[in-house]
Amino acid sequence: MSESQIDAKEEFLNKLYDDYHYKIPKFQRPFSWTEENFVDLIDDLTDAYDVGRDAHGTLLDDTGELNKRILSAYEPYFLGSIILNDGEDSGERSDIIDGQQRLTSLAILIAVLRDIVDDEARANSLGGLIYEESDPIKGKSETVRLEIRERDREFFDDHVLTRGATEDAPKPETGDSEPEQNILQAIKTFHDELSTWEDEEDGDLGDFATYLTLRVVMVRISTNSLSSAFRLFNVTNARGMPLNNADLLKSENLSHIDDDDEREEYQRKWEDMEEEVGNEGLERFIGFMRHILVKEKSQKSVYDEFKDRVFPEDESFRGAKFVDYLETVFDVHRHRVYDAELDASTHAEEVYYHNLVSLMRDFYPSDEWMVALIQFDAKFDDESALLSFVELLERRLTVDWLTGSSNTGRYSRVYALLREIEEAETPDDVLSLAVLNENVGEESDAFESALDLNNFYRKGNYQWPKYILMRINGERFDNRNSKVEYGNNVTIEHVLPQTPNNDYWLSRFDDDHWRDTWTDRMGNLVPLNGRKNYKVSNKPFAEKYEEYFKKKSDFPLVNELEAYDEWTPDNVEERHERLKEEAREIWLE
Image 1 (tube, rainbow, N blue to C red):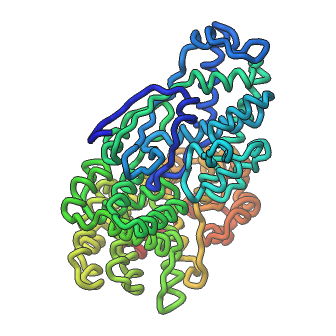
Image 2 (image 1 turned 180 degrees about the vertical axis):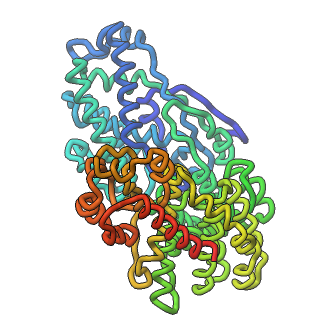
């Protein structure tokens, strides 16, 4: 094709798979469709076939021969567009720029039909659309129509391309990676859905297979260069999974690495990270990079901000340098946030860091703090200073959160902090910054007012009580000796029930106004492991503690209830004031 030439042509599936050879380029995401996508695809195809069959009859006559008059009467079913790069850099195969999810899923569907149709000749024909064995007499070599990512290729060969493999496919959950699980899920879904359709709609698999290959159409858009293909990738399709920021930046940066061996190395780096956290997880880390590099609120998509702001300021950052930086962000997050590890001089500091960061990771309502932690650690690599930095950062952002700062406001503070870290020469320069320390003590009145709210239980979309109580609990816990993590398996329970209907509670808390004022306040709340048990919530206090609180938690904030014989208004108010004082000591002093 000549320069910038684009060719678009409608092709039925039999020609799409028989006349062309495809490969999934290295920068593309793994096979990512899930059960919902597969169900949608097969349901749409069988529904479209049923409409044609009901209106015109079956495509095959009693002898199994195709009735071409009826075939032409069937309305073609349009399955969207695929975009291909056929330029010199793609080699003998067409690079799939957009459409790999559909082409891969359809190849699996063809393999499933190959293995379950009764007609041997039709099975051979279906198999030939996705894989053709070598024929030395005709001088033909082995041909795989769709060449998927190298790391998934052997698995695809064994479970899809091999004749009969789909009938004995393992369960989806046995796959070693997400793409393997998705391949197995596609096989299972197509088998199950076709079996149900065959039984309930009196479906004929051979007739449907004929419809699939001869009446399902896609637009094959080919261009002669990768850059031209990417300008077209936004062409939408009915079932396509559009490329996201991570996909675009993967292509953008790998394509700027000229040396083949080096590009292969960085391709592996990228896919190793992607394999560990998934495509969406990797996009999150790229977002962290954007925050660190741009240091202000997003104005465009992440991809556009790199393309229009970051790369023009430093052209050398495009390519290997980008991937190296992403790997740094990824590794720091894994080490310092996900694993919450500190290599401190004392075990007590390591445990304290672990428990504090785990608490923030699991219960703090947003992740702007992670960006600041990553930049600080990547720049200074100072274990003792990192612990001090996290303590100051957690105090600053928690006080801001409880005293009314919005998520946007807290991000603005972090952006200011990122700029200061970039300019700082030593960790101490950062630890003494006004942006971390200014006015924290002066927020005392607003902070205490937040803790005194009548609706404390519901504040912050129920996140306030969980974070505050677990943070206080962590300070009480002997956490300088043992590392603890609770994940998302924590709920907040009322000691005095929200809707008391037991004489025990109604006799002790008979003032409706008092109950309205105090039931949802901090002094009446405790954290528990696991789901709430509403059946015991109205039992008398002693029974509720023994049967419920004591069994559901080893939190100090719960264990202290054992010291109470009764639960009374005085107990609630006394405990509330005590918890407030502990909160002051943690965040204000």
